[in-house]
Length: 443
Image (spheres, rainbow, N blue to C red):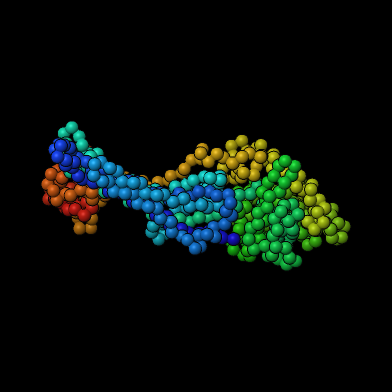
């Protein structure tokens, strides 16, 4: 199962605004007519319930939206760039990878509802044409903005299966056989450890209710430290509301084996150790298990206490299966009632309580942003570089070799408080000021 992937999302750049004036025979005073650039397209992740793996990202890892069109004459605006929707499985966590080595990842969102959207790379805004800079005191603006650059981000996708119930236990305890007995899932079953190599999800019906159950590879001591196979998939247990701890009744020391598994759960995530459990002692069809039933239950009780339900079952003959499913269903119902303010990360809205999925029209689009409020930066050579995005784009979209345009640009810097930031940074007469591709002296 492919449950992790790294991708790159690149949003489109905004189109450039245009500096132009209307020149027609019958309209000699037509005025500025430069149109605005179009907005660049964005890249958005969309939770798709039909997907259950991140396999498709093995072959395609780069997703690029279209750039916005440039502004045109007669105040015509450029077209907006086409956005890109990337479908991911429900239950996908999204982390932004740092641009520099050693920089921590940033959590962007968790797509836990079908149709939920997360905008991960926002398209750049289109630049304003000179028609947008007309003021009562400036009837002939010579300025326009370059389009804003679209975001480029590297993302780590981490899929955690959404399930109500998790099946845990030692290898060969009968978890896969149990999942086969209670659902339509058909995991591989064989008489040797580690038959299950990846998580398997099944839907279990009980009357008018239904719940999702997930089986992961068997755990062994040291799993939380990377021993065996189960450690790779323990994260899929983190969203479950209830654990069914499957124990092989034909093996000795069932209490010690339960304690060992619970210790691994606690070491991986202490919250897992607090998840309610039901113990299912398997292989009741074997004579020795039937004969030692009381002794086995006593050992198990010493490990889990009197409040944890214990069921004897046979996944092979289905003995005790119906009672176990009923107990799980009723326990889940109690847990749901207790969740007066449930965490959305633990919900499976399309399986629980017979509710319909959330209406796509009402789902919010999350738009995490990294703010940069700097205006001025000092260079190694001692000059000052204007880094305020709006000021930089205005310089890039204008011809500052034109003296009148340069004067207008300085006026705009005053209005944006960039000149104040330069003074506070220590700029004085004669210092070199850099912005975009332009260089001029501070006066």
